[in-house]
Image (cartoon, rainbow, N blue to C red):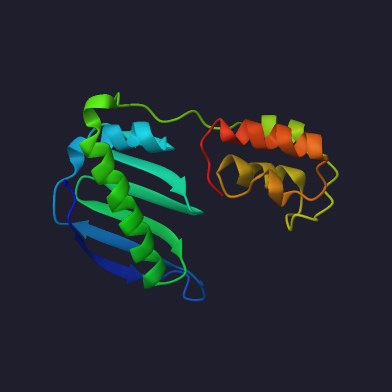
Length: 174
């Protein structure tokens, strides 16, 4: 087992005291730098930095950055949600480390969806049924992993499947 534990700090953005979400920084008990390329290969990092090693990805609707000595998670409801995600991530880190002999490490970020490609798959009516002011705003959110095909009620079933298939290529979980 590579990662055994952490100490965490839960904070609110000082510049936005009205924010309804909190952020978590978990200081790790172990240096997990060697597992980061394997974790990147398994989870499909949105960004990857070789030195010092870190990977950032989207999962469970959160932006999660894993560094050699800490993990940062944004937009959490509370400390309980932070702990749940940290426990899940601990399992992913330890499993990637245990299976590293059968995983090809990845030193590059996963390809990113293109906003223009997402727009092409949308109805382009700016109907606002999704809660966004325009289809372009929706596409930008989808490209960042914050929205999926199921969030656009104006899509036909065929278009919904096309958009879902396009986004699946980038391993987004929404």
